[in-house]
Length: 97
Image (cartoon, rainbow, N blue to C red; front, side, top):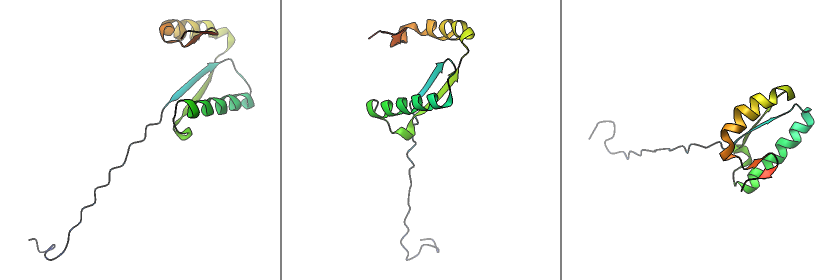
């Protein structure tokens, strides 16, 4: 026995911290709107995801990126929607499921 542990009970505590997963991340791109409208939309999206996706509201991250109307076609339609067309759940108002 080591001199420091002779006659003593030695207890080893192992603490495992569970890594939290902060998901989902929801990215909204739209024409510019006022702050009150953006807050209402974010609250509604947060509520729907918490209810239907089954995640805690504090795990959800939502961003809004405002795109000027004159930049929408090139930046969003051509740059993002077209390449991901096969993953779109709703495209131009039409359900794809």
